[in-house]
Every structure is written in structure tokens, then in C-alpha cells.
Image (cartoon, rainbow, N blue to C red):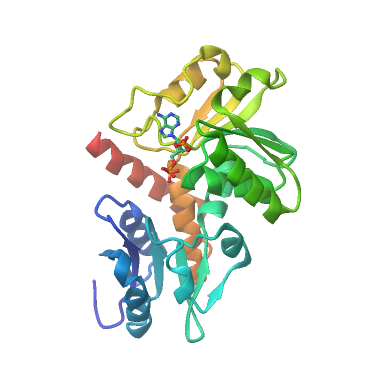
Length: 289
Ligand code: ATR
């Protein structure tokens, strides 16, 4: 029941109508017995400052920020977490003295998703496909959480080089190696963790994979696609057919939400509640497939 004590969290983005975040947070709030609701707010690019001030004035319990405002929101924060500052992107605002502190929970979200699949980054050699926003976050994660080396493969080599330079500088070591997409042919023959961070294969283009050559898939022990629509991408199917384990990005989405929820409420979400929430998310996506 919404009443006089109900606290509000929300999402600032544009567009926001297809978001699963209300489902994540409202499910977690119900499971934890909290009087809290989470709603989407359509925020125009010219109104980010006013939206943050409004959130402050209305004493929202917390705010998520999504595309295209993750960097644009930073000037309007009073504090920023170290990792979010390094990445230059914020997806979670937590009330702080005189304003909000910005965090990036996409990184720990991906980390927890990998851990839940039994993957440790420490000492791993990773092949990362893509150099856009999603792949860039994964590159930071690998560099900051101990991956031995990341082969960053992208269609445009210049973009891969720019991301590698930026991430290597932030991590203080040369762990990201930029390459063209075909660069996998020159890599040592062994099994790798491969993170698929391009937008290729996203619905409605579900019959595409960024690399089609089946020989590439023989290099994969685990193929982690950051895409979750469709639930099984062509990249995942090709990975499975070559004998590797395949996962989609839905758990990353779940855990970035769990991390934000924990920051706002001070609670630690139980694994059984996260698992329940994950099942609800899967059901919701199946409805739209
Ligand atoms: P996101 O925020 O989802 O990461 P993005 O920033 O637009 O989206 O990045 C899209 C990524 O998918 C890029 O790495 C892009 O490669 P380029 O940097 O060369 O553009 C990659 N990508 C998109 N379409 C592609 C295609 N048809 N073949 C190969 N890579 C593609």
C-alpha cells in the first residue's frame, strides 16, 4: 500500500519505457518488506540539472541514471565514488550531504554476475568484443579486478585504441591490448573468457553475431554476452555449439540493480531474493519475445 510513509526511487533516462528496473526494485522492496516504490522518469537532455535538483527537493530515496545521461549528470553531483569517477559514468545517485553522491553499479553488477557463473577475473586472459559504452565498462572491470590481459577486439581499431589507452592509464598497467576484429586469429591457441560487448545480435537483429567464423568459438571456455534481448543470442548459440558455456547479460542487469538497492537501503539482499527477482525478470522478457 502506498501511504504517507512511502519512499520513492526512480530512474532518469530517455527513453525509459522498456526498462526492467521498476520490476527489479519493486520486487526487492516487496521481498524485503520496505515501503518503497520505484518509478521511471523521462528526463530530457536539457533538464538533467533540474531533475537532480528536483530529486533533492523531493527527498527521493535514490535515483538510477541511464542512457544518455550517465556522464552528463556528473557535474550536478556533490560527491563521486572513485571507480565511477575513473570510468566517467554514473548510474546510481545516493543522497549525501547537500546533494547526491554518484556511483557506478554496472561494474560490480557485471562482477557479481560473473562470480555467480563461477568466473573469476583474477589472472584470466579475456577477449572483449566491442569498444562502445557497454564494452568500455567491461574493460574497466577487467583491468581494475585483476585480469591478466584483455584482448580488446573492435571493428574500428581507433576506438579500441582509445578505450585501451584510457583504461590502461586508469589501471596503471598495460593490460588492455587493442586489435581489429580479425585479431583473434593471431592469439595463442587456448581457452578464453570472451565478453561480447557489441550491439550486434540485439533484438530485432537476432540472427547476427559479431564474429561468424566457427573457429573463433573453439577458443571460448565461457562466452558472456552483455546483451539479454533475446535471451539466447547467436553469439551464445555459436559458443554453446563449440562446447563452451554461454551466459547472457540479464544477471548483470539484476546485480547492478541489487547493488543500487543495497546502497539506498543499507540492506544486504539475500541470494534467494535476488534469484526470485531474476525469475521475474526472465518471465517479463519471455512475455515480449
Ligand atoms: P553500447 O552502448 O551498447 O556499447 P555503442 O556505444 O554504440 O553501443 O557501441 C556499439 C559497439 O558495437 C561498438 O563497439 C561497435 O563497433 P564500432 O566501434 O566499430 O562502431 C560495435 N558494432 C556495432 N555494429 C557492428 C557491426 N555490424 N559489426 C561489428 N561491430 C559492430
